[in-house]
Image 1 (cartoon, rainbow, N blue to C red):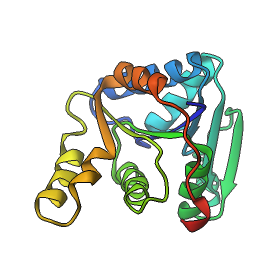
Image 2 (image 1 turned 90 degrees about the vertical axis):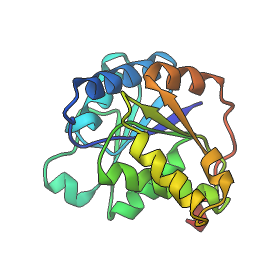
Image 3 (image 1 turned 120 degrees about the horizontal axis):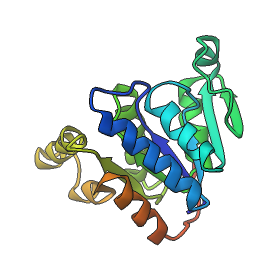
Length: 190
């Protein structure tokens, strides 16, 4: 893997294990020589993962829409910051810059980003890995929603195979190290 997009919360959540997982993942990506691509924020788990990657000497690429820059939530210390005009263009650019996707705990935005890359994978617009970092059961509800869509006949069983659920950041980092870099997706069709 050359670059990894990390989707995660703009809040820290209630369990300190979430921030610790973000720190471990950010540091691990940097130590493995992988570039972190993320939503560009300085707050919540986004800020934690970016700070940890930078503290370990890693390259961090933020992608943030201009209205969030105006709300003063953009991280000013990242290696490279790209400002987009919309949330959709942010996701598109993160997709283009990433060789794989990792989802840490997060809220509605995190779920939206993950569902969108999963949807694009289902439509065969890319074959990039989608890894879900389960921190103390945090992924259970998300995975249950995907499983329910399959069980109720709204998604094919192969959709479930497009995501890998791994227990904690150590397992995610180990899996990323095993994965080959694949050709980019058809970003022009997104």
